[in-house]
Image 1: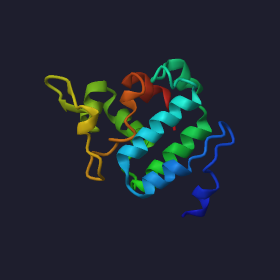
Image 2: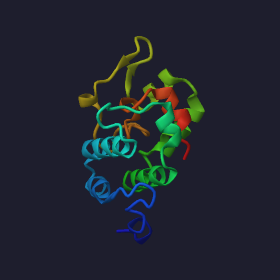
Image 3: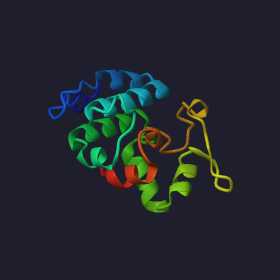
Image 4: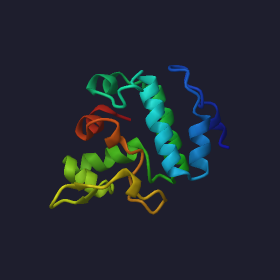
Length: 149
């Protein structure tokens, strides 16, 4: 385990322990890691019952926790998956549909058909930025603009 990463596995901001996420990512259990990321983010914002975040929670989301989540995803996916990867793709596209298509969440630009979560590609062969699947957490555009890494 990388020593620098091991020092940041418990957030001093939220108290969340990220060792489970790290283990899932290290084992390349992408779906489980995605679900862990999703549930952790809801827990931090006390939105588990609602199951989604609004713009206010995104803007107030602890930067330190966002940093940890992002760093773990970047490290264990060889730079393929993470919020920072998604942010770079968003900066190049600046269009929700084109972004979703590029990261593999949208089957077609023509008919705007969203891929079901169960049909995502849970391997490193997935398109860059495929995970974490933030579109399930909140509206796509507000997430990409709100989370700045």
